[in-house]
Length: 98
Image (tube, rainbow, N blue to C red; front, side, top):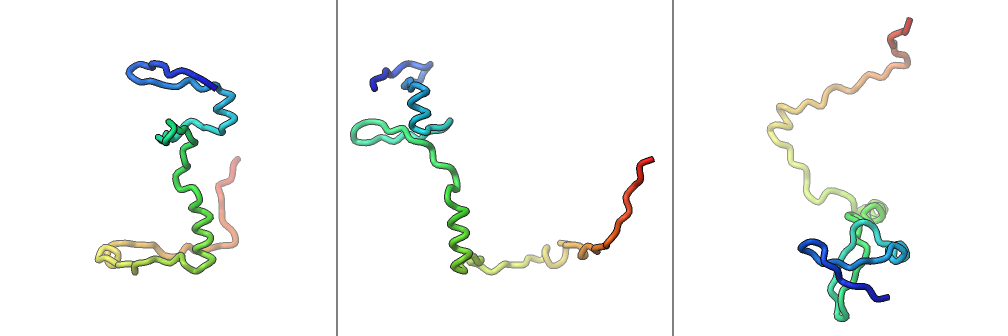
């Protein structure tokens, strides 16, 4: 398919038919790469794509622990209050509507 490079303000662009965009699976964001034969337009990768699967593999392998030990600060020891454990009761009272 041939198309033309058109002027868009101070930019230049390529008009791509919607049917081509749909067939190529392109979304709102694309990535441009210069290749030997010209310009490649590809779907932009999603940030953190594959992290969930990688995390699950790490967990299964037992490789999901912190690399560095936690360091308690003076603030943690003297100022921070995690509160007391919440008491769990079988019943609670709620306001009644009249």
